[in-house]
Length: 255
Image (cartoon, rainbow, N blue to C red; front, side, top):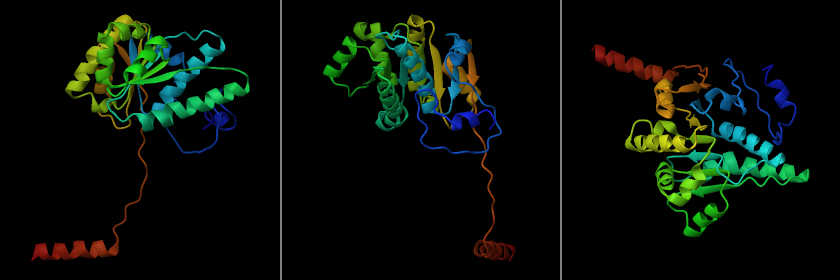
């Protein structure tokens, strides 16, 4: 709590705190800010997280710094890959809403961040695809299948050079099936043309987490695991009607 208390009393960079909630947590506080994560993986590993918003905020923070220093390039910095076709709710809550608020706060200071986000799935129209080719999004949202298609397309492949981060959400849904094998191949192709790529796996329900970490980065690379799961305490009491029923059943069985 001593480490997090200062954060509860002030705004964090461009994020305005609107709600505070304290909870008791015995675990370790993991520093996920950029460049700490990037330095750890060094383009040769990855990290397993539980929360989509955590990964996006770290990356947005880096993009904001680049935009403010006028160093933000017209290229894809992060690729977000999800096995779910319905991406709208998760992306809206964890990326578009905070990014919109951050850009609004920057505008109040007279700063135009102009951080672009685009979605590329099987439902993306031809005109939307053409817009991406003309003006590359800084954060690209896609599915495993669409990622494979983009890496096989000469035009879209040009957008995928020098990608810094690849976020794989719901990684537990991919680790043990053919879609995961297909994605693993695409990730190696992406790494080949983006040597400094950091892989970020997201899941709140993944087990065994060490094996999934190997799936994320391969057996030859390092992977940091931020396991922040904790068991909730609860009291269990057998109510009298249930206890009576158990007693009656037990008596019948003895007879």
